[in-house]
Every structure is written in structure tokens, then in C-alpha cells.
Length: 488
Image 1 (cartoon, rainbow, N blue to C red):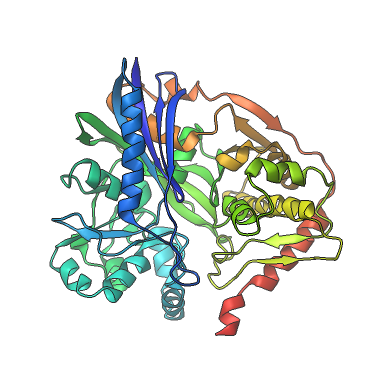
Image 2: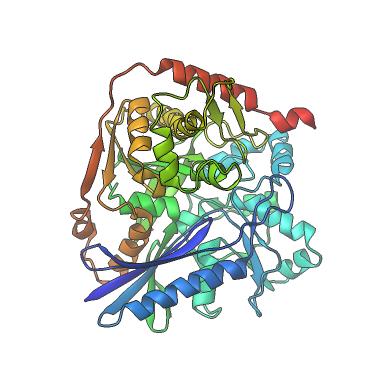
């Protein structure tokens, strides 16, 4: 039996999953790691804790694979999170600054004031927002003693988490990233497929620290003799794993955040509605682009209800409690804990709950939280359909929260579209495995695993009128926008 091992390095945990030749998960291991919040709006990880957690799950899977051959390793990762480390010792010079971090909001606002956002969008498909890697790199270079000098001397390396993991796997022999991750840095030109000199100058980033950009499917190195053959940012990996290979196909991943992507084929479609243009993957000479809507808080909202408010103990408890009420009783949750992503791009927005009365129950707050995740996706899908000039008939879903039947039904009702959940929702990890399997000969072509996509359940819209819920949501969003900026 041949296996492909997927490393799925996420925002709150590291996982390793073994896939067999039929695309089935045979084993998995997961380990959470700490989150650090040194100041309001700041989010950090310890890079060594990321690596340790990933290595331990990896070791567990290798031990479990006795009797079979691991043909290749694929990697999916949290994307914009930024690490800088010493080229010789491999020691990180600062904590990883996480994609949710908002500390560079003022820097982004200054660049917008200088009229630079159009240039960034034209070259990268992205917005000027602290979400992306460039201003995170710049912040570390400017705020950690001696780091800029070491970087300019070529003594440091930068990477998103895929680069960091591959560096560790290969004991510092390989410093690479793939096009999908490079396209999330605000330093990579998605049209020329190269690091962009004008952007490097704008963000004051030395070229010497940047990784080589490679295909999403292709052997770049090895770990204990096992080829490392695939890598992609987690959302692009999920698009691939959902077999969204044709232009117009779309998926939504419900994880810490929510990420809606539509395949646009070989055309980099510019958004007029606040979305991002990004690279899905590159295999050989073929580049596939996508439109993306990024929501910063989805599953993180459910974690907040569990860990901070102590309303529920598990995600399934949240579902059960929310199902005890027919509606949210006019309660609206806007979970802008880390600002608002697409289509608003407001790093100064903050979370709020509206419509509370003496009669508002915990169950109604739970239901309003499920609605909040779904309503953010409704907004994104409308933007995406206007950009693409077409109406989506269905939406493929994955990620941990997609296991919630109640959330998926709410999503279908509010979208007024079919919502399709596959038989296994580990599509991010499977996308990474598929890219590696293609590179190592486990699968001959995409058709081999495209046929393995199986429907678990189709959620059909009820046809009820939800305009009141949507109107209250829009009012809530308008009220939280610019919250912190107004107080400065």
C-alpha cells in the first residue's frame, strides 16, 4: 500500500494525516500549540512550538504507516503568518506574526494615504492590509535590534509557514515557497510570477531573505528519504482538494476564519467588489488563478463562546443549544475581533453584539453566532458573483465547522444556494496530499482523485424570506466599522 502524508499546519494546531491511494484518511494526529497576544490586536506564535507540534504529529504518522510505503509528503499551511530566522542556526529572531495580527494597520493607512494601494493591487491582487506578510516583515526588521542589518547582509531567511517547515524538514538545505503562498506576501507579482522589485522597495524588504518560488506540485527535497512533493496555502489546497478544477467552481472553508474561493482558470480576474485576486496553484507551465473573499473570524467566534464566555464546552454543544430556538430573537453578532476582512478591509473595526434585550438567551446568542458566520459568507458570495459576472448554483464546503448540519442549513437558507458537503471534509489536507501524489506518481492525473470526491449531504435552501436578518446584519457592520480609528 502506498500512502501520501499531508502536513496541515493551521492557526491553532498542527496535524498530520495519512491518505491511501483511494484518497481515504487512514490515520491522523493533531496537536494544539499556544497563542500569544502581547498587546491588543497583536497575535503571535512561537515558531519552535509550531515546528515541535508538527514534528511530533509527523513522527506519529510515520510510526503508524508500518506495512506501507509513504510515497510523498504534501504541506498545507496558514498562509500570511511571517517568520524570520538565522540562516546558519535556524533560530527565529522573533515570534511568528500571525495573519490575524493588526499591529501594522497604521503603516498600511499611511501607504494608502500616499496613493500606493492601486499599485499593490495591480501587481499582487491584494489590498493594503496588515493581513499580508510584507508589513509584518518590515515591522520585524525595524523593531528587533540588529535584524535589518543582518537581513541586508544575507544572514537571515524569511518564510511563510510552509518555508519554515520545509527548512526544518531538510535541516536547512532547502529554502522555498510555492506560488500560492508567495502570492499572499504583497511582494510577489502574480502576473510575472516573480518577486517584484518595486514592491520590495516600497516595503523595504531585502531580496536576500526571500525563498525560491517553486511549483505547487513537484519534488523540492526529502525528509528521511521521503520526497517532499507538494505545497500550497491552506485555502488554495482546499480548492484543489475539493476538485474545483473548472472556472466558476467555488468552495468555502470554515476554519478559524472563513475563506471563499472561486476558480477563474488562467485569468487573473481583478475585483471591483473588495475581493482578492490570488494564485490557486501552478503545475508545470499551467497557472490557475482564483478570486478570494477572506473572513478573519469564524470558528474563532465559537472558540470565544467556549473559552471566554464559557457558554458551551464543545462546538457540538453550541449546535445543540442554538437548535433549541427558532431564531436569534433579533440578536446580531458582528465578530470583528481582528477587524473586518473582505469586502470592507477595515483593521479598526471591532466585534459587537446588537439587539440585546432582557429576554435574550444563551441559545439565541449561539444561534446569532452561527448566523454571523453565514452572513459574512453571503456578503462575499454576492461580491464574487458580481466580479465573475455569473451566478453560482452551488457551493462546496469543508473545514471543521462544516460538520455542523445546523450551520450548513443556515448557510443554504441565507445564500439561497445549494450547499454541498463532501463525504470527508479534510479537503485542505487532501489537497496537499493530492499535489504531492501527482509529483510522486501515486496518482497519474487529476481525474484519479477527482472521481474520489463524494457527496455526503446537499443542503437545499428553504425559500423563506431572510431580508430582516440581513438588514440587521448590515446595520451592525456599519456601526462597528472604524471603531478603534475613531478613538485615536
